[in-house]
Image 1 (cartoon, one colour):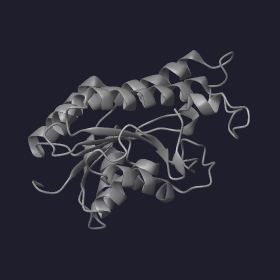
Image 2: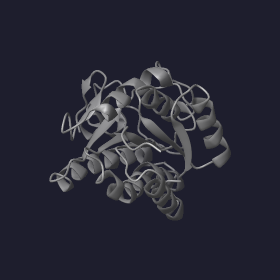
Image 3: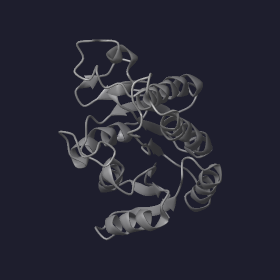
Image 4: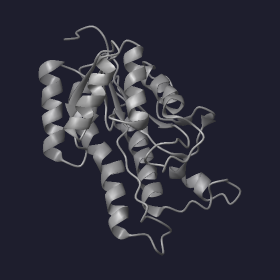
Length: 243
C-alpha cells in the first residue's frame, strides 16, 4: 500500500491535537494510520481527512486494552510491513485529580494507566515494526506539568497547578523517552518528548491560548526529523523544557 513513503501511527487522533498531527503529517506526504478507541469516531475522522485528498486510514487501538494493541500491531505488520513514526498522543485528564492530599485515587490510576502505561504498552508492541524502518521515530506527547524542575520552582507561572495524577503521568512519560533512547542506542530508533503548550481542547476544558492546529505543528516537526537529531530531549516550540 505504501512501500516507499513513511508510515506513521498517531494514537488518540480522532479529535484535538491528535487529529491535527495526523492531518499535518499526511499533508507532509506521510501515510498516516489514525488511531482511536472509538471505531465510529475514528473512522469518521479518517474519512474526513481522506476526503481532503490525504493518505489517512483508520486503525482501532485502545491504549488501555492489550488485545486491541496487539491486533493493531498485527494489522500494521500485515498491511504495511513496518512503521516509521509513532506518536504517543492518546491521553486523558480527570478533573477529580488534584493536590496530593485530596486527589481521587481512581483518577490518578486512570491517568497513569492511559498517559504512561498505555504509551509504554503501545511502544513495546510497535518496536518490532519500528525496527524494520530505516530510521524509526517516537514522539511522546508530554507537558511542562511533567517537569520536576518546573514543579519545584515557586516562580513558575503554573506552580500552583497541582494535579498529582496528571503531572506524575507526564513525568513518567518523560522517563520513557529517556530510557528508550538508552535502550535503543544501537538502533536507528530515537525518541523525543514534545510539549504542545496549553491548547484549547476537550482535555483542557477548552482553556488555552493555542488552537490544536497551532499546537500540532511542533510535534509534527519533531516527528519528521530523521536520524539522531534532537533525540532524548523534552522540547517545546520555545526551546528545551527541563526534566
